[in-house]
Image (cartoon, rainbow, N blue to C red; front, side, top):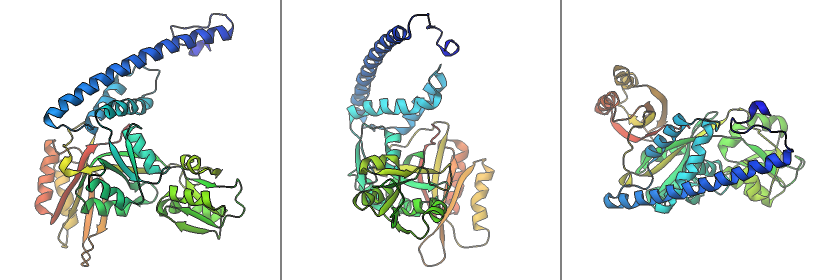
Length: 376
C-alpha cells in the first residue's frame, strides 16, 4: 500500500477504519470545492451565452470543445488517466451548455441502442434526446429542424459502411460537424437465462452480420430476423420468450432481459463510427483544431483514368486520404458517387488547393463537412 500511496498521505500505523475516515473527510472537502468551482464555471458559461446572443453564435461548438479537452489532456499532471479527461469534461460542458439552451439530439432509437450511447458519449447527458425509429427519421428530424443535431452510424470496422447513411448525406441539407466511435459489444439477451427454446434472434442487420459465426455455431437453424434496431429486437424479446436479441447491456436493463451470453460478436475489436449532423443553414463552420477530417462526395464522368485523376491533386498537395468508398449513383447508367475522407481542414492552404482542383474536374462535388476527429 505504501508504494502506491500519494506523497501527501502515508499509512501511519493507526487502525484502518480511522485512516479511511480521515481520507473520506478530506474527499468530502475536495468534493465541495469541486462543486463550488463547477458552479463558478456554469456562471461563466451563462455569461458566454449572453455574449453569444449578440451576434447569434451557436451554443454548441464541437471544435471549441475539442480544443478545451486537448489542452486539459496535455496539462494533466495525473494520476487521473488521460483517457478519463474527455468523458468527465464532456459531462461538465454538457451541463454548462444546457444552461444556455438544452440541445435536441435525434438518434436511431428506441432507448438502449448503441446510437443512443454514442449520442450521450458525444454530447453528455444534459440534452433533450429524440429517439427515432429509423435512420431516415433522424435525417428528417435534423432537416426539418425539429432537432438541433442528429447522430447516425456511418461505418463499422467489421461490416463496412452503413449505406443508407451515405445515401442520405448526399441527398439532405445537412452537414457533418463531428464524429465519435464506440466499441460495440453484442450480447445475447432474452427473458430466460438459458438458450433453450429460442426460435428467433432479432437484431439490426449489421448486428446479425457481425455475429453470424457465433450464431451459426451456437444457434444453428434458429431464424435470424432483421429489425430496425438492436433495441427494437430487445423490446420484442421482452414481450416474447421465444425471441432473443443481440444488444447492449443497457438494452437488457431497459427491457428487463437476462444476459444469456456476453460478447457474441465475431470480432473482439468491433467498433462503429457515428457522425453528428446538423442543418447547413444553421451551422457555423468549425475552426481547424490540428486533427481534422474533411468529408466529400464526388462523381466524375465515366472515362478511362477518371478515378486516378481524382487522386492526383491529393498527391500534388500532400493531402492524405483516410477513406474511399463508392456507391451507385442510382442514375441507371452504371455511374458511381465516391465518398472520400481527407486528413485536414479547408482553412489549410494545401487542403484548399487540393479541393479547388478536385472541384474543377468533378461533375458532382459536395463537401459533407469538416470536423474534429474523434481522438479522445
